[in-house]
Length: 302
Image 1 (spheres, rainbow, N blue to C red):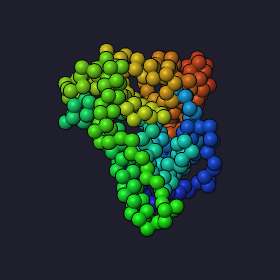
Image 2 (image 1 turned 120 degrees about the horizontal axis):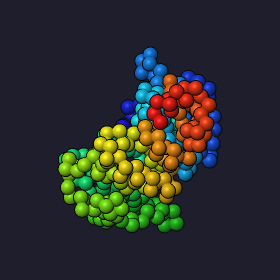
Image 3 (image 1 turned 90 degrees about the vertical axis):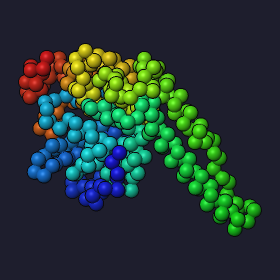
Image 4 (image 1 turned 90 degrees about the horizontal axis):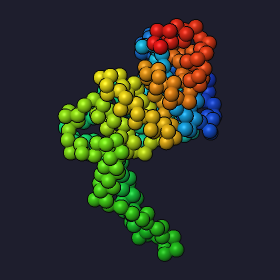
């Protein structure tokens, strides 16, 4: 996970217009999002909103800025300029705890990114156990200092301790129970103790999705989740994503699967040259495109 302390001071402010209040109805909002690598302009002043419950598919040719846009949404890529809001929090503000915000943003990569030295169960429980133990330690530390301060307070000014409703043993047990529930959902409960290297690509990608779901995210970000799979394995991964969409999960997915985008997305972005050239419902984008570059792109991929 990226350390927010390594973000450059320049990232704390924008060179463009002063930050405007974000839309309180938007789950994610980007304003004037720009990304450069040296002289290469990858994202060119993009402003957009993603609402709770939306399923946004991002399509476009290779090198159009799709994956960079997605990675900027949870600041895995530092924007060169502009702002990213998540649930009203400005992720470009260095005072915001970026790791706390990322807990609620599930991310699934092209290459699975599972830990091959850990079994499947450990891969899924690693993050939730780490976060829960971290919170438990913070609560215990707060109670410790409250006890010390209460020694010097009068009876009527003593502060109550924060109740501890769990323990390390219970945290691990709860995480493993949830992991097994999720594995059962995708029919891989029998793979809990095996290592990722022994699984097919489709199985590994479904486990990567389950790992993200174990953190109970508000939104799922998918970066071409089927691009590294053999054709016969693509269907099982797309079926799981469809199930999540049907359950109301907010998701943003970069994909080359046009049929999937047409079936599942509530809105489609067509990106080219670092900009969203056209957007709209799948019927409009695939059935009545307006942008000439989009027409050209669809003529080659459909």
